[in-house]
Each structure stands twice: as structure tokens, then as C-alpha cells.
Length: 454
Ligand SMILES: C[S@@+](CC[C@H](N)C(=O)[O-])C[C@H]1O[C@@H](n2cnc3c(N)ncnc32)[C@H](O)[C@@H]1O
Ligand code: SF4
Image (tube, rainbow, N blue to C red; front, side):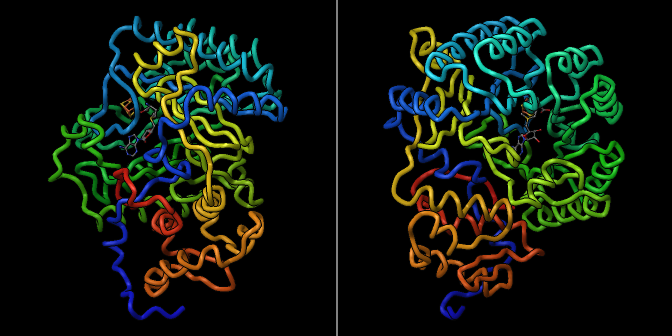
């Protein structure tokens, strides 16, 4: 490609670019109140007509204490009362959804948060029972949960397994005592080891570990030490998240001393070191921030071109409908996205008055689906045939002429190859995949503040 008027960017400037994570396209800042409960109700009824299996996401926005780095939608609950009250409303929301969806089949359930294992055991069991009564759980259903290792006990793990939980994700983040202090999350290695052991003894052997880089005071030694120690525990998957510092959205992140945050160059090195250790230890890179053992279903999905990206990251879940339950949760349907009221009060008020708690959303329009496909393929496979995606949508390569032009600087830098209607992110620069994807984002620059690309 010839575009001498556009200089090649530096890696540091590219890594600093503020771009979305693309767990959806269009991304959440472009959702609006034009999509309301009426729109969503119509979409749910159409889902029912398709007769296809759906996935469920249940959001539990409570934690015992808030970690300084946390970017999730959650709040502190020292007592169980607010959590119990929340669980009661979840049942009402399930009833509203079931009225519209009917006894649809469910292929995946994912509990996220916050800390879902904060739910008192009777509340958790009652919600699972309610879902089972109203929907049809597939026999091979994946039933996953995000767990805070500090709250995993042998008995708790057995209870989860008895309810059908067959996959768990543990938030490890870092094992370094100084970093743990800086992020207000004290969690020594024996706590993490005990949580792995408890899950495995209960029969939950599909375990993911979340690690983070770019945290305050983190350096290469810390990354090496944590990664190597957690590799010894042999989780089947890892997620390695770069700390997203967004204090304008998450005010508690102001508790982090910005002077102690690794700069863009250090973040690139930290991500690269974690990746090197994991690959040397037999893990396969899955998309931009996940790794899995060769015999993990995610690796098979990647090899067979069945990998998808959704709000929980990477998945082999092929369902085209993902229904979010709980305050702030986002749902995806074949016609667009909706988000529930983000605050617990607004969410509860809507449900108590018999309405779906939809706050905003985005119906696909124009070339949204075309671009969503390109972005998902880039983030799942690091390459995309624009010609093939265009053909699937009744278009030609012409539809992307502007986008290809915008890729010129990245190509001149030697990070991206575009030839024969195909875009490929070169292996040594997979970390800039979000930047490449952003060149296909027709909404970028029209609102929303994001986090650094690496
Ligand atoms: C809902 S939490 C996991 C469950 C549980 N609450 C815990 O912390 O152990 C999901 C994951 O998001 C990641 N995370 C949280 N805040 C983040 C941020 N600001 N930037 C990047 N990743 C973040 C962490 O790795 C965390 O484990
Ligand atoms: S990282 Fe997990 S435990 Fe910490 S505040 Fe966020 S959701 Fe809660």
C-alpha cells in the first residue's frame, strides 16, 4: 500500500491510544434511550419465535470491600441484607423475561459481578432453581461463575458444584504484597492455592485465573513472579488484563497514586512478559488477552474458527442471544443491544412496577452488522477477509476503502498487512489489535472516553 503522506506511528503512541475494548459493536457509549423496554420486549418475543437456545448473564453488583483498581459495576455490602433484597428482585426480573421468552433452551449461564459468591447460599440456590423451572437447561450447559478467591471455601465450592456450576474464574490479579496493598486487595498465595484446591475437590476443574498488568508498583519482576506461581497451579485458562485507569468513571481509582503507575512502555513489556511465560508453559494465545491449554474448549474453538467475543471476553458460545439479568447488565439479540438501568434503585423500581428494566440500547442500523463482524474477527483471529465479510452482507470491498486507507500508517510501521482484501495483524504486534479494530469503528470520536489500547 502506498500512502507516503501518513507517517508511521510509534508503538508507544499507538499503545497510548484510547480505544474501546469491543466487547460489543456498536459500543456502550453509543447506546441511547431510543431503545426502550417496548423495543426490547418485541425483540424477546422474536427470540422466542426463533426457537434457538440462548445464554444468560447474571450480574451481582456487590463485594465485601472495593478494590482500588476496580472497573466493574459494583458496590460494597458489608451485610447480607442488601444482597438478599437484590436477589428477591432478580426473581421478578426472571419472571418478566420468562413471560416473553417462554420455556426457551439455555446453553450457557455466566454469573459475574461484583462478586457472585457473596450471595447467601439459599438465595443462590433459589435463583438457579427458578431459572431451571422457567427455562430448559441443555444437558451440556456451561454454568460459569466469577469468584473472589478470598471468599471461596471448601463447603461453598461443593454447594456450587451441586447446583451444576462447572466452570469458575478466580480473580488473582497479582501476588505481590506491595502491589496488593496499593490496590487494597490483600490476597496471599495460600488463599489462592486454597481456592483452587477447594474447587477441584468439589469437581470444578475448568478454572480460569485473571491476572493484571499495569497496576501500581508492578514491574517485570512482579509480573514474572506472579505469572510463574499461578502457572504452577495449572488453571485451564488465563485472562491477562491491562489495568484500565478511568478515574473519571470510577472515582475510587483516585485512591491509586498515579505516580506509581507503569508507563506505556512498561505496560507493553509487562504484557509481553506474561505472554512469553504463558506460551513457554504450554498455553495458547486466545485473542487479545486470553490464554488456554491446548486441550481447552476455547483452543478448539479458536482452531476451528468458532471463537466469539462478548461482554465476558472470549467464548465458544454460539448463541446469538445473550440475556443480561440484574442492574447494569447488557443483553445482545440478533436485532441489537440493550442495557438494564445501571443503578440498583432504578432497576428495582422498573421491575417492581412490572416493566422490563431497560435503560438504553442500540438497534443495528446501516453498516453496523458488517463492521461488527470485521471487528469480532480481528479480535478473535487477528485477521479478516474484508471481501468475504462484505459478500456475506451483500457488499463489496469498496465498502471498506476508507478503512483500508486509515490502516496505511499501521502497515507502514510493519504491524499490519493488507493484501487481496485481507487484513492481518502481524504476530509480533497482536497487542495493538484494539487499535486496528478501531479503524473500522464508524462511531469512534462521536462520544465516550476509553482506556489505553495496551
Ligand atoms: C468481576 S471481577 C472478578 C471476580 C471477583 N470480583 C474478583 O475480583 O475476584 C472481573 C475481573 O475484571 C478485572 N478488572 C477489574 N477491574 C479492572 C480494571 N480497572 N482494568 C482491567 N481489568 C479489571 C479483574 O481481573 C477481575 O478479576
Ligand atoms: S475486582 Fe472484584 S472484588 Fe474487587 S471490587 Fe471489583 S468486582 Fe469487587
